[in-house]
Length: 153
Figure 1: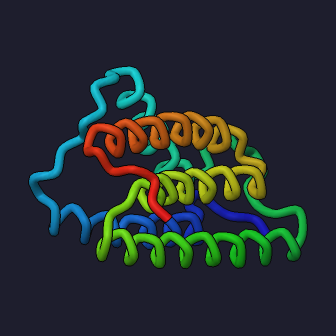
Figure 2: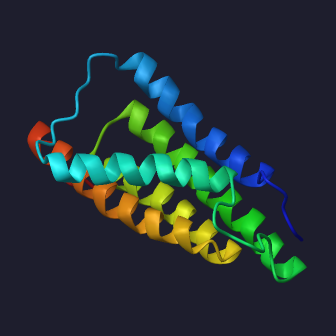
């Protein structure tokens, strides 16, 4: 299966990842990023926005698609499982915040971007996904640390 200029599957994945984030942002308007590392915040945001764009648009990829139908099914099912897990953890986090849930919410989107980039052989997406993972997990950890939330069971 080949894609054109826009990957509709990738776009829908990004939209489904953004919905709980928008709900959270509306409910928690005053919450601030407590990570003071300018470098970490920059690489997190650079990675985030690059991944969002690259999930939609196959920049610098000459053949954008899957080598087989099995890869396409793995892409769809794998991302469906990761998105479902993301939504479940987000729902639990909204009920009761914990460090473990916060860090899980940082790890799952990183996995989605990496998983998608690898299966699509979109190496620029893989690179920015790795950058996003490092930045997002670090920033989340620092926010958890500064709020005094400890890893709970």
